Image (cartoon, rainbow, N blue to C red; front, side):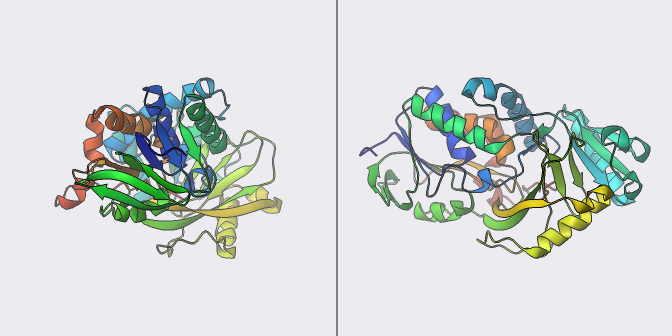
Length: 382
């Protein structure tokens, strides 16, 4: 590490790397990305790789649509195959209330330029032939949603940042942030102190802790979410399938593995990344409800990660007046990877040029101090 940088980014996950990449593309290459473990060790490397534009606020839809368009180009741009595949997302309703929610979502999506369509029970197997459609009343399907493999994306961004002159350090922890005369002055790491006038907090589940170092209260909490992967199977599942009742999600990779998770209704805020037998039991029941023939498949491994959850399940993006030079991109509530291209572009514009994308206003931290301004995102899964 050098003694000083134009910007220090805390966190070597998708937000930190995507923003660092966009900063370098703008010519701001004197940057340092500090990762406490290895690249993708947090939520960015522990998720199912889902990418979708099916949301319940227009701001989340817009940021997701623009990100999907960028994902189409990133394999070529980075020189890494990120395995982006648009097989769609199919949400499944099990009761009449959920059917009405899906109908309402479809109307809302269509109004905002997303081609989601309502699917009657009799047509569900046109999309997923092996689905036991007798368990479901209807679905909502957007063919332009999809999946990608997180690690090639992370590695590609890291390599391009380094090629353009940025610096990425791992196994290095941020200990404190210095403020002088109302503005960011330095960052103390486990490897030494560096001077800087700009810090981006992209620390995922540690974002509130990094905020406290700068005197900024960021209202996020970590929630554990578990995931598993099975042995490879012959291809049979094109879309990501999601059940509305238990918020199970499952997709099939290009190598044939099934990858998925499920919500835990009694999960409490926690730093834990421990795996549980209860998760395997819940997942097994729900998978068999979808595909009865899969009772004999082997689970290769399971793991856990954290959703960095905001009060309204919507990201917290932007900056504050004091201390000057402190920026943040956190509180994704489980959808940071899928909107990272647009977030990286907006944060880089803000940090490098002071240019504030109109979309950022909806994600400002100030919204929590304005009574009645929160529009809670309800389509959070996993």
